[in-house]
Length: 180
Image 1: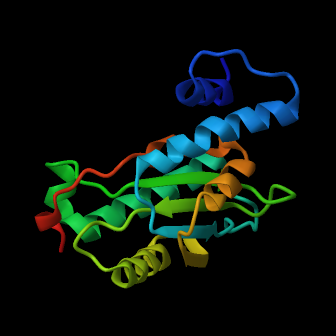
Image 2 (image 1 turned 135 degrees about the vertical axis):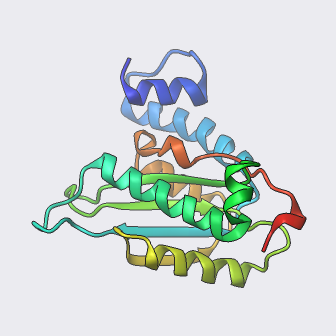
């Protein structure tokens, strides 16, 4: 089973998939948007663009996913400290979808992030900018906007649900008094 099909089965369940591209996309949107919406109370919509390698080529997908995991790990450690992340598995709610651009040479990730309770949204946005700017391979362009509605999730899914980065999509696990 392809990676795309296994991700679809994880979200939609073992159902039959339409052969028509439009109806499949509609079905994915009908299930994926509520699923992503229920992962957290989203506060920020973030787009991070990744730098090219030394030869000027677009980095491979595994390298981009590694940069995304590093970015999120560093962000969680800044918020919950190293011990909170390692010992108690504290984390913010997040979801990301990988985009490659119209010609496959513009790697970027669209994120939704939930601000941890006890931290202002402005401070959280500044922290996201700081961590993205200091994470190697991330932050060529950083665009942070307040999350307004599920239209952003629809835009993320429109990039292709196969671009979902599994290892950074989860709900929050934290205690309010553990936040720096």
